[in-house]
Image (cartoon, rainbow, N blue to C red; front, side, top):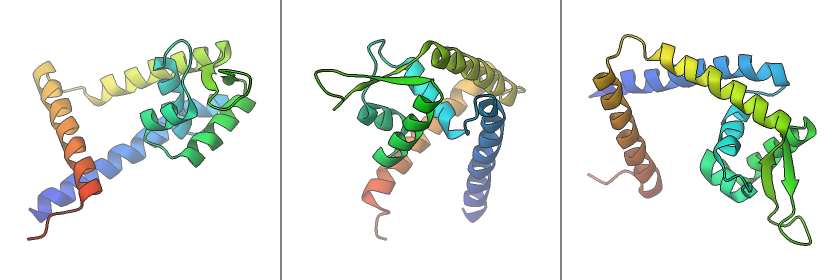
Length: 152
């Protein structure tokens, strides 16, 4: 059991480290860091009318402060704009600018290549099983992190 935990923990940590390294290399072109890649992708996938900061945080699994900080940086770089939903900016919608859309498309293309290359050597069935298992593990861990481990 501990060996399985060690393998799992190491693999997750190593995947995360490598992903951040690759994403940082791609995001450096925009003078951004790896975390911005997740935000660009979420905004790219968002409704054409934009999404609120709260919705962006939910999609990215980030808190309000992180979203605010990251959006401000992307806004200063001309990648994101806020669009008022009424007479003020409260609950403004966030949208990619044309420059932001091009950056997001570039990041998405590079991410797709990274995922494809990372999965080389796996059959389509193995890949499908892997992602299904990964999704179930994620759901289980989310539940455990909310409820805590059961007492034994």
